[in-house]
Figure (cartoon, rainbow over the protein chains, first blue to last red):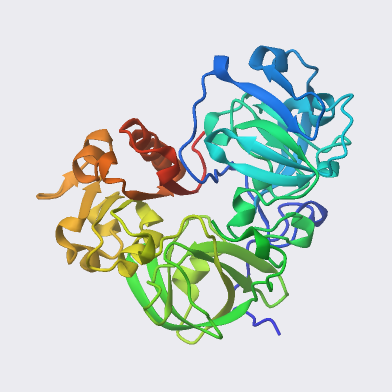
Length: 201
Length: 243
């Protein structure tokens, strides 16, 4: 039995349609930051994006090569495990489908890896089929370093820690392996609609 | 690192009923809630909890709050700072009375946490209410672990845990950003202050930085420039980016 918090009324409800705000989330116009450590600043001429692991020939792009790939405008709602949701965020990025185009792999999982040692794990099917991008633009501007620039993964249907900042590549894996936050108490999959915040949720 | 092998086999973190045992006014805008929590199993310094409030019509709001108490303090304490247009903090700071109950679950977070067994020295840098999880670490610290808290507050009136921190003497260095006071530093936490009051990289301090996003961005970058390895600089940010 959930106790009522005497005198708590909450904000005048729905500043947002209920079907867009997952349980336990609130809508913000800000863009808060959650990072485990200092913001890395890799010089753009040393930046590469790599796909390795269960792939015959690992692929790698320099920044210029990456930016020459076809990109897309993406408008999505995002949901952070720290409870905020932000609606209709505008991104520009390269679809992971584009990066994996023509790849034959038996892999069922990916481990995204980033500058600063951050990793996060996802099922391959959650980053393919138009569900994930490597984003380099936000709101019509280059992506700020504190929000993950020059490029971050964008997987808007999962809690936002899965959208790894400062992403530098994807490792295709036959077996799942927990990433950074997933080892420190956060849920292995992270579906906001099932409120999969922490281990055991 | 926490064991990956146990992933998925853990029981869910249950919502527990917390009742307010005591209130401590820390500043005009922040209060410490001293709580009795059914079945609470303890925490590590630096961890947080999720709080859930339920209105009479069933509406619920959840927020995360750092744990202010030390692991051995007995009761669980949260220090909550009022956010002007907030939804949950005005209730916790201004409405909650003795004996009122709400739900929480935790402890949460294994990264921004410190165990005495990890040793020191401990370099803690806090901005505003970012001092809360750092206070938990200071309470957990054994006397033989060197520690230094560098704490930035707007004015002296905004200093949380003032008496407790003053009692720690030189282990605490306070700086005020919006007020000049005799005998107290003023200005931001910059490279000079970190070099002077922090430990040298050669001493391999364990570093925890917590505060508003722009504060943490600036301090973490300065620490890396001073030569501290990025992987030793653990951060926790809150609030908007300001741009």
